Length: 390
Image (cartoon, rainbow, N blue to C red; front, top):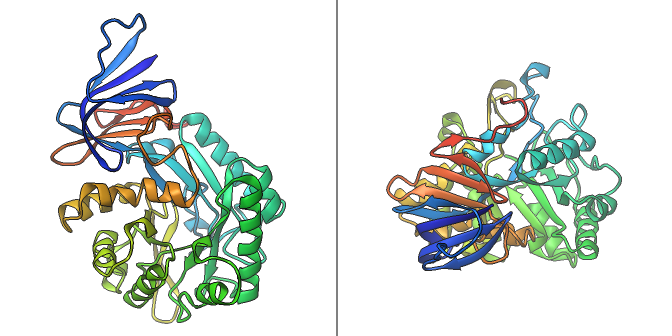
């Protein structure tokens, strides 16, 4: 069935004004100021978007789809991602990864979970690897990226963190080189997603790799860059050299009190300091654990990251920090799509995947979500649920 979205104001994410959008199966087949359907001899579902804004589907490119954590022992292992946790938040594309625990959660299970989410209606990609080095892959970095469709890069490799395996510059260089060549041979991004902890070394290893080898700075995406003020300031310097930086939207009040910065505020500061908007992304760290440790390093409590935090920070960037809609949207649409070479994602354009979010013009609340041409959420209610959500 064809779907016709009428009378909405389109941000593709660039502002396009009032447009009608025709969806055929899972693709965007036509965009025009007005599309007339009276003479079409086919069934068409019309979605009225009068007084609504139309955005590309959101990309959450750092999610622990299997769950994560365990820093407070086995009972603190966080649950797997459910379909509606993503879709009701406007997320239509996910990139999954392992976390601290690569023993009880592994690449086989990660791939199976990704395939399950795809069957339920999400677009799902993966990073191969783990916190620890040597990486826990299915086969090898090159084989995983080249031979497994869902795998587009390496992650989440941990540095500057008491939970990491303290990888060396040489080890990180070899990981990046393998990922880069595999990406070139397969036409994928071959990106390396890097977890940055609270340690004093911050981005030192990544800077050394880029200064002492032929690996370009854009081969890495350091995440959690808003973890503390000192790291955030280093992230600004790194991004101004051309590096990509990722801010984490899931947080807790305790972390904010300890110096972690809200993404909306962080985006404003980065832009004001001359960081290019294309170099900044937001991710949720969804289903990952948000552990708190006391002054002696002992685990004290745990909360769970959620994809629902992703767009909330974009709304705050627009409403509180007065960042233009088209700029704020890029951090969860076109920027991650470009960084990860997801060529059919991140924009509402002819021929791209029909991943569309329709929001209230005044409140910016998500009202309708279309993923790969299927209406997943209508009037704020999930109409397609995960297999075990029914």
